[in-house]
Image 1: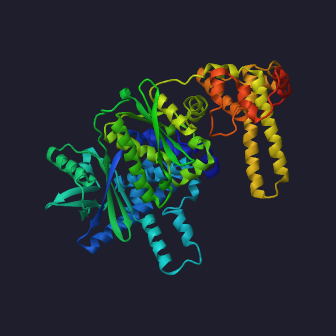
Image 2: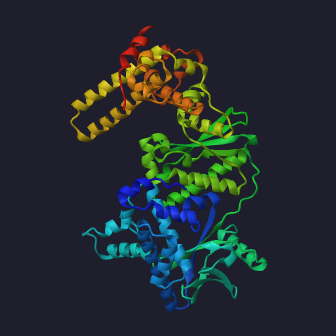
Image 3: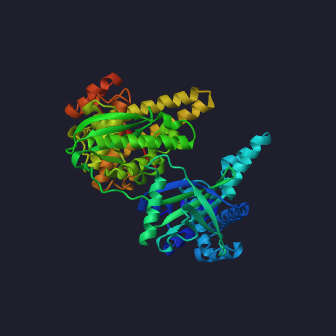
Length: 569
């Protein structure tokens, strides 16, 4: 697996990329991404009770030692340490078995990868939460509040123990659940051949509680010898030790497929909601609905997780009722900087609540109910939706984007309408769009010169940069498509490569249309109804009249020649 940002981080942070590559070659440790691809996991949390305070103290010492091993391994990984040597070093240094050492290296590696994927400096990572650490540094904080924060930070930093599951080791070697005298216990290997036993306490109020299912699987494994791997993690919280059991979730056979149609799902920032579009098997739009997501921005992470699970169940209930498969975006296919369709408002909201987490919950709940989940590449879905289907069906761009996602899930290809193709060859239309952009750029420059507020001026500069990129898009298209003969003769243009491949050419065409139509034919980016006359009659002049003067026939060639000298690096 190629790690995002590893190559860049080597020069900036002194990170050795070879260390992570060697780990993957050896195959002993699987990354977070690889684990996710294997399936989804059920996690059950329980409280541990010790008969002797001495036993609890020995476990706390083990947790503190293991946490230190993770931090030690993290630093050595950044220095380029090899896994085999690091595992032996950890065992000697801390007097603990090599399996715990391997698990500590795994957590350290996952932490490092997560830091790189978020494009954060690995050297600035604070184990135990940087947020809590920064609060503790404040001089005015004292008394009970400071003691509470310090305890919370120390528990996160020093109170961790982790053991991977293995089928050949009766589920788990170091941390194993065992039934003693009709009471479930956790057998904790202290790492030196000694064991401590702790009672596992979990109250069950529902017959569908995940704990009952987990225990049922354990009892079946004890009778048949057909064990399954389960991972165990110990955490210290408010002075108590909790354990989390995780095992792979088993899904039933798929009974609801796309043979009866699909429901396309897309997220939108304003208002913050899910757009659900019901689409027939033949690709025709049936109906659409919304699910408000504003509550997901409130409260702490636990509350948001609970509400997102509720939303996932709500979506799946709709799919069950309609007997339709679910189509969602495959966010792994989209660059991180373009998630959220490039909307700043949505990106800000995604910092508090991650869209990907909701999609994963929808996928898990759907699979548990035997519903097919289809993932599609989200690239250009919003652009195609707003230009093609928003005007045709008189729907907003949010629903139109979800409709494109649904059609992709059914296997349909999105072609340019005939009149859109002709529009891309219309010199008058393209020159008018360029003139509109030039006029907009001049206006923004004037506003920047007159604006005294630094923050507002920076905002205008950002708009100017975006507008110049739009102009760049149109001029590059003109040169690459050969619409302007004089532009094609420029020396700089001969150094540029033409867009190769039908898919790339089609995407470029949609992008150019999005820029040109938005500037020439649309007063509002929420109302795309004026484009209907463009799609059916190619009457872009009629659509553009409310927006200002339209060039006279024949102006296009001159305007193109005017802009042919513009060069880009």
